Image: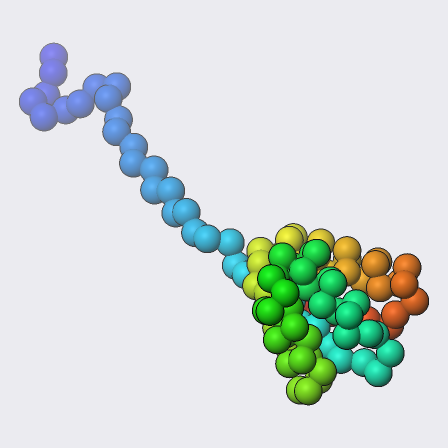
Length: 102
């Protein structure tokens, strides 16, 4: 015996998928009195893929104001770029410093 309106075995389920862009983190370059301007420009071009004009502009901003945001990336990419730049600076004997900020 079946009751009208009763559904047997057919259950519809809706799944909501919430896709969000990954959160971005700022890479901040800090000024020091020892790292050469040429090295900073080289890092900006090689690791952060800035063109020559943008690299020079950012280097001067870091030099004049003490620090500057040089890019915004998902966390893993930001940390990797900072590690690459820091390793290169150590190889060259520079105390170059970058940080990752939310």
